[in-house]
Length: 456
Ligand SMILES: *Cc1c(COP(=O)(O)O)cnc(C)c1O
Image (cartoon, rainbow, N blue to C red; front, side, top):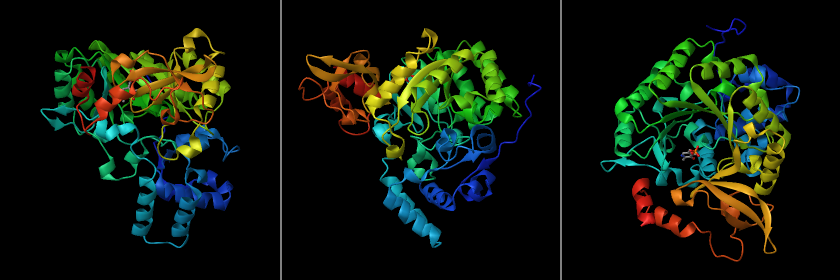
């Protein structure tokens, strides 16, 4: 049932040690290539031949957005860090010395933003569950141990710390048994979001081991299984010509036939990712197998900081039957200084984009920050009682009662994150801060208990 015009392709990754073998790079200045290698000692790097050959416009590199999205850029490190790593590589320093220096720089890049590790790890019988996060009542995140890589890494990845090979920084689960035990005890959870890394880097038979237990009729409270993935953009062959592509689509059908909703949370950063025949066929096949594709991506300087580009991307998604879902604000981690877009500018980009698409694409929400208290959307700029303010709103909250309640921050042209904002109207703190203190007090907590405590 493969489409006759798509040739099967062998997945071929390139990592740091392969940089010299990528022919297209040879056209770039030697200095740029050396800097790139230095950055790749600190931050994860991996691309594949499809990204290199079919998605990057090499005539436009290094400015090309798909190149910026996938190849290490000199500006991603602070100048002194870059100089230090270049010096070490330039004089062939021993590997341990290079690694120690890299670790030092990594530690300074806020590897675990928004209290991810400490605040969201749930427990069963008092034992913490590795590879499971439960932050919002309805949805549990699950990180399968074998899905903690991607077909290509995004330079701005907010989970970059997982990919640098430091075991202490990884949180992943080897099997679904514990997750199922947790879900049995938490019938309020309707959605399981399997994420990574990228769960679609797993072979179908491995993914099946994680999915099948969730289809058990005894787990009727789980209504939706979501797969968070960049594979439709970086390796659409996964759904079309890979050896187990048909098995994968059959697994999707089994999820549907078990009465669950299967949502592919597809990460598309740029309309070019939707432009190739194989990418379009992948979308068609996923949907034919019963999946709904919802699309999300962060707003990234040098990659997609342009309203017309987002409008084009959303129109194309709708065109192919997919649903625009979230525009995120780049998180406060890693090489944020290089990719960040201030909230005020992000809002202007969002509004320019959303104003030129039909209502079918206005299912998208944003710009949204996944911050410690929840997902906070910047709804607009307004003037209230003579003060210029941001109108903000929780799309998700650690306390569900926060959702949908408008609140206001003093307008700030340079703020890039919730932490940079001050409450409007001379208030000392935002309405959610006392509740958040209750929840975060005392380190590791069971989110469910903490919410009950905060509400009481
Ligand atoms: C975004 C997110 C979810 C899912 O939220 P939805 O608004 O339902 O898509 C769940 N958990 C965490 C930690 C998230 O960041």
